[in-house]
View 1 (cartoon, rainbow, N blue to C red):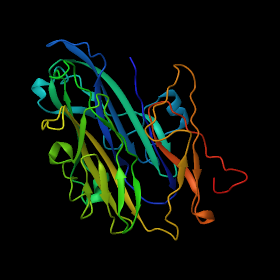
View 2: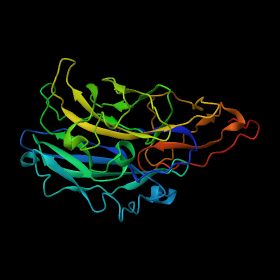
View 3: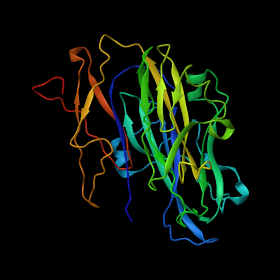
View 4: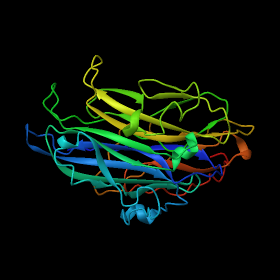
Length: 347
């Protein structure tokens, strides 16, 4: 079996801000073995990725390398919580009573961005043909920053183990990742492309989340500035009107068999914060370069260390300093410290 992993990164300048500990995330799933029959059982891996504040939820390279201990959520939202069935629970195929925890293991961190990323993957054995909805919901935290209230938020994922009519297999849902927060300059229109991957090469559409299960009381349009739009391909166009404000992007990714299809085979969440900052004299983004291009697929040998080197070029001169490259990756990826080029202070 071939497994595909992906990671997302962004070069950042340090900006000192105050934020609450939960910043968003995603919930996805996939069948482990697609050799299934009707009314049989299938092993399903449910993967939860959440982003929190590093200053409140600690993460270290040692925790990443060992994948132990799990992050400490004592006194925080989600402590001891389970990923609960939210809808169609009578047809959950055995998930009810075998719910998985939400507390994950550290996969990435950035002290400059005050970010800790956690992830956990759990395998559950479920009945083929089961369609149901799971959700992680709580009160407080990030929507207080974005919408000015703390009355509740939610992420939900539709798990549908019915056999596809086109190929006789169980569907594999799309996957999306995004660092949270993303900084945008005040009063400057920005576009944010959310990276999306679908292993079945299905038609994937993006929409804003809605309703209690998908976003509770942290839904658009309240969570976003006026005039924010999104395309079906997950291109977000946003203009932040006030420096210092946060906005919450809550979207659902859904896959369809054809362009004409109207009923999604799955629906997975992607949620992240956008922070609006007052720019200095230079607003040019740093340039991130490597020996590969965006979307490349690289092979790695099992049990052998694999290294990727990135070069970051500061296009703003001595007035700005690059402090970190934030990453969103799969487990056991270790990031080294930045090394200044001795002959070029911009690299």
